[in-house]
Amino acid sequence: MEIKKIIIPNKPHLDPIAAIFLLLEYGRDKFPGIEKAEIAFWEYSHDPSADEIKALENEGALFIDIGGGTFDHHGKSEGNETSTSLVATDLGIATNPELNALLSYIQEDDLEGLHNRYGELAYMVKCMHKQGMDSLAAIKFTLQALGFFQATQKEWHYVVKEEFEEKCELVNVKRNKNKLKIGIIESDNVQVANYGISVANFSMVVQKRSTGHIMILTNKHHRIDLREIVGAIRMRELELMGTEREIDPRKLQYEGKSTQLPFWFYHRSLNAFMNGSDALSKAPATKVPLSEIMNLVIYGAGTEASSYCDCHSGGGNCPFSPYGFSKCRKQAIVG
Image 1 (cartoon, one colour):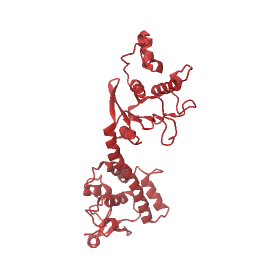
Image 2 (cartoon, rainbow, N blue to C red):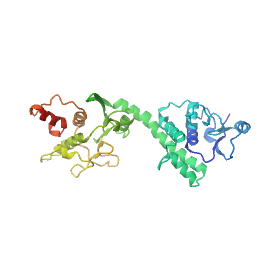
Image 3 (cartoon, helix red, strand yellow):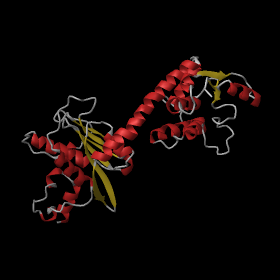
């Protein structure tokens, strides 16, 4: 039967709106006519009776979040369902990776009330109703917002994932008894490094763009101290710029940027080190080759000394000794 009307609670919250979004995006084959269906509101104080539901369904109505039907999660024995999750299960899309964030967000909001803060989409829907916005207008706005969010999720879980897995080189670095996963990737897609950190759970990702700009991102859960790496890269940059004065890399571990090196920014709270960015697209690219940066990153992130390190004997053959790494200094003290 063709769907002619979608009936939802009056002044709907995000859950039934997101359920409609999934039906519009994924349910056109199973629910013919859904894309043209009128959205109507159940404005009565009583729930629709079985006879009312049957009569309306015979006229092509589909109930969401009301009426005790397939897409009403109230009273369901599992207790952890939402109308959105019920729709996703019915359409066979509940395990689609691009829907993970949306389904989790709806569950947190609808069942646990966790999204009542400034800027949250669920809270924004409530604010629109409180300010007297027409319910259909509020739904139209929210569906459009969900469209933008989900387009980004699809790109993230398919396009970005494929590029990251195809191009990223993995280096395992020993840190005490653990191993750090460090990724190296050359790409102009600004999302691949973020994907490596947040989805692939790499400890660090170093990304180089075709312009020569390089950024270093870290996983906050792995507690990596970037300061010595920051100081070492800045020192090498100054060397390649031809600076003649003596450089102390320990004084180059400052947050932010400087007049000497305005194109390198150390973001302390994000624990990231960036040569340019989307906002600073005209910043000069680093002169330090990616291979040298990786040598400094790998050495600085791990706990093992270089096989060339003879700092303990003062031999002067360690290539990392001039760059201020504490393990080189400790070796020298031990010697």
